[in-house]
Length: 554
Image 1: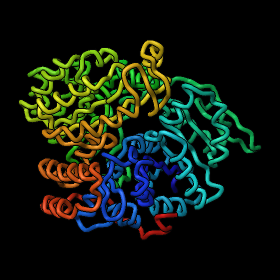
Image 2: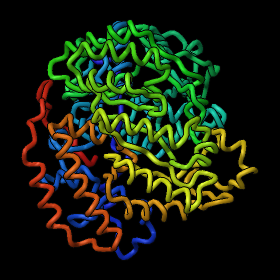
Image 3: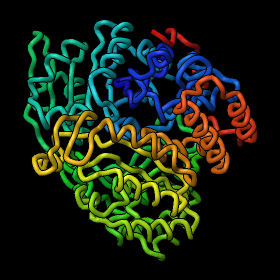
Image 4: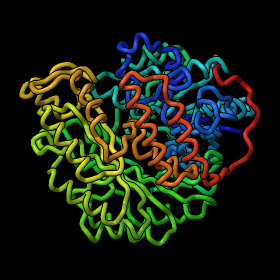
């Protein structure tokens, strides 16, 4: 019997909708598709779908569930949230079916739901959601399977709604989308456990913190909002006891929660409530279990600030070096020195994400980055010396940004020959510290539509395309996939050189699209095919997938 079905993630960008976008009306949606996709085979395709087509396969959205599991898609990378929840539930005697990728494992979800002796609770994580639209899409399909399904929604998106709104505002979307329960705490693992335990015992839900629900009498009810500390290392994840058929060569791991920094554009310090670091001994226990899993070769550390504090970072590096695993992480390169960089290399580091954001000191000061261009340059030089691949991320248009400061970004990327880079426009949120200085900066608007004393959002979007057109010594990767794109393709058996070569060709495709040359890419597609031919066969583990039960487009 399955007690809980947990949906970890889904394909957030609906590329099947991009098929319907007409080229003759491109100006209406240019910002949506440029640098995110390539026009190919009659529609705008994700970068991974370009690789699928080059391999002679269909695009992801064109396949059945079983076919989709064999196609390239970034959301196949195993999410950590479902694994953590399933482990905690298993430790307390509950059975959980983790659906890692909703859009590729619908048949598995249906089988688990229909084979259970009583209907399981179906939980949806909103870690990557930016609006109710994805919740609507998922719940619509779930309720077609069973109109009486008990659906729980929780995670980061739900939590952020409480920062600038009231808990009572959940009632309308819960009724609209058929949601029975909603957990809105930031660290909701213990709340989840309390809810599942109360549902099994039949006790009332009034003691479950951070909960909103529709009761048996159809009344909206809620409990008090309570801050919960993250559960870091309190229970070792039962990797070797969980049913995780979606695992290939890679797992993700969190050793700390929150962030000790307060970048002015970022909401994470406020939502996370501080910085909490797990004990190194608990990390060692985690590595022991991970190392025992057959076929696992890579670990992605998802800590926002992996290398701070420095002393703790060194202890982790000494620990990781004992295992034959490659790893990736976020890295604040202004704090690394020669010793740390060598330790990173020796312990198996094969890629880091550098959230540089800008190469101009005045903009960095406005962002409260606590770093300078010179410090970034020194850190990048060390990574280059020890041949550690890096992706440098830049934010365009933050208050203080000008044409001249953007030019400094271009020069920094080119002069330092950074392997990969990404560009993203400034996104204005009310629960970030820049909002408190909006009058000083003349900042108006919200989200991706704003203006301030030195730039507008429209100009930032134009500059993104201009920067892409001018950078020649680095390879652009979509900011929404960034370092995970590299880690995923390595997971699928491609070498770093194959990734560089194929992504360079995709960059050339995007350059043609930006010049309105949409229909002339056969030469580049053929070149990508040749690059990909020598893939190492990826490890495929887990039981065979059941036959498709419900059409993939249901």
